Length: 428
Image 1: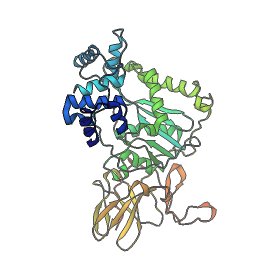
Image 2: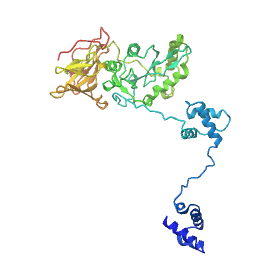
Image 3: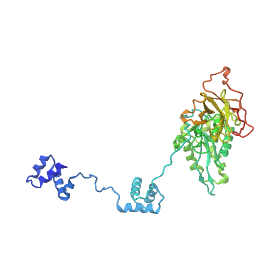
Image 4: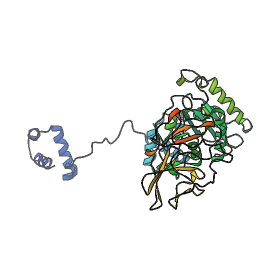
């Protein structure tokens, strides 16, 4: 800055301008530029100026910008993509989508999208991918649509991950736990039980408040010996193949009359499974790979057997009796029994099936929830018992002769009442 000022002051008096430029090591063009800046702005004209061009040959013309703003004012709730599509209908070359976005932001005609924070109750995920039929089933609700009669339709979909076999597409009257459970029971009776079930974090498959995200429905799965696999919140790509199935359903099944809806779903499912070639299966049909599960479903056990560990019944309010105190665990487990693994004199781990729920402390009467990193495969081993029942044995208890599970009581019985409603309290 000082050198420039010194140069222009000498330039006003010198008789050989080019010699002066050579003395300062600049070109004559630069010297003339600095002198003209000094004449126009004085000392302030010597400061560095932005080299950004004043205009662009590819910049949007004023009439184009005005047309874009008029479109936005006419359709205030439409985004850049839709507005650009409307602009193209005029027969003119439309600016890019990013140009629409930039112009509307500068004009103050956009509102930043508020992103909801993704919440999950517990990360039950091991990255497990099916290597054989019935190892992993995936379940979800297809996004709802309105039919011609104005009725809302939101079908439940269930598929085998390995074979892509669609087990069910069912339009349910309600999406509550009882309705979904009744539908799944019919599927279990027909195809048997999977080893794991993958779902999202939404109701009724999971609960944001429950321990490890357990809902009444997913607690029922655990009691049947089905492991839980959940995707990340707001990440449908974690169950991408199932979402791809929903795309097919949207294209081919939306808009069916209500009286024909389920019949159309059943015909479509049969065609998908037995006739439609699948590229990921080497152009084979899912029915060529799928076989029913060897784990048959014979009802829900009234209680879970944890071997040598003491058990406690979860009351309707989600509490258990331990060390003379009522300690709250989770209402989603009401009616089920949990295994209590003594750790020290005052502390004990609480298990539900293969899931470590957390730890109770007798001195404070408190319950500390476990995190998703403490769930299986570190939990009790699972054994299939007669009639499709499931028993759990403490990890590391060793094997017994003839393949008999160690430290197990008699086999579980199937219920004569609704699952999860057993009220027999185990003594302290």
